[in-house]
Image (cartoon, rainbow, N blue to C red; front, side):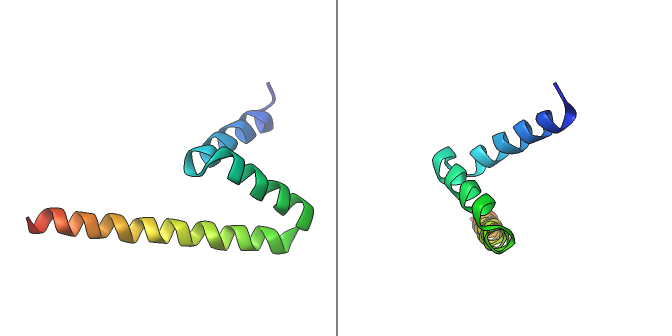
Length: 67
């Protein structure tokens, strides 16, 4: 199997783990058809999701130490 195919399969598996497969595939189709503007919007949304999760984890960590 070619290297780029393996990397693509790994990346797709990671995307499936982050979000539901159907939702992410719909997003990828929208990005491919819309180009750079859609890609920028998706990256911004994913960045927000990561930031929210980090803040949530920090809050849980602080709460667990305060008990």
